[in-house]
Amino acid sequence: MNNAEVYSHLIASTGEDLNRAGLLDTPERAAKAFSFLTQGYHQSLEEITNGAIFPTDNNELILVKNIEFYSMCEHHMLPFYGVAHVAYLPNDKVIGLSKMARIVDMYARRLQIQENLTKQVAQAVMDMTEARGCAVVMDAAHMCMMMRGVMKQQSSTRSISLLGEFKDNAQARQEFLMAIPNP
Image (tube, helix red, strand yellow):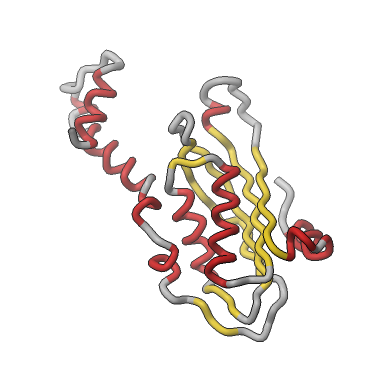
């Protein structure tokens, strides 16, 4: 059974008429959308960073703030979305700035929980740059809390992953946390 057929069965299970004009191509569109939303399973760090690691003599904090991301909750397959703030302390190497956003997107485009997504991004930056430390904060709204369940429209979730010097050095951690916006 292909993905469009799966969506046909799912839609039919609601009692909808798949021959209704508005639904004629919906199974194919939904299958394409789901494929896009989960494309992170078919990407690798090497592919998305594409060799964009460069030597540097600046080993001070590098921070990319407000990287938008969209993901799907692995528990309910509903969206969660927000912003990521990704920082690292270089160890004579830097990564192209756009690659930080690509790393966030690659892991976000998988069925996820925010807590794991945050750690995966931090570990990927550490692995690719061999940084002295990496820190990631993600702020997100979860449709599984807004559309169903407790239905709390203004709720947001902040998750933090601190690796290397950010975990062990209070001054580095404080510099990072002071540099990012509060939600």
